Amino acid sequence: MVLHSARFDGGDVIDKVDRTYIRTTCDHVVKPKQQDEMIKRWPPREIFTLESHCPFFSNPEQLVELLIKASASTCPNQ
Image (cartoon, rainbow, N blue to C red; front, side, top):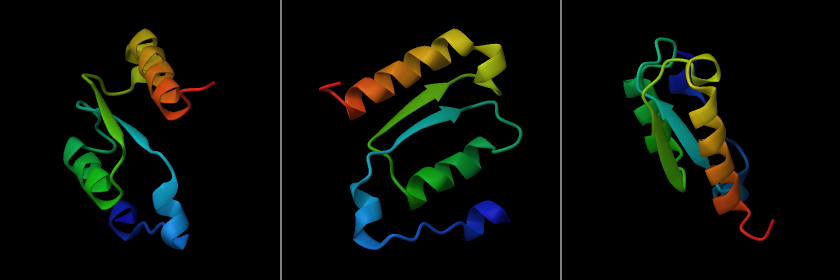
């Protein structure tokens, strides 16, 4: 499977990039267990969870709120 073989090349520099993950608990494409594996392999600074499958359609307002939170915490001086 593609997710199991994904690699992030970039040496030590890649670990300096702030990451935020928005986990979707009802996703049928990238199942929650697979999302947890992705989080474990490349840990983000923070994780948000949505009770949704496809938040762009099912819960766009909450998705926007989380994106704003994530960007504000990543770029506090912006």
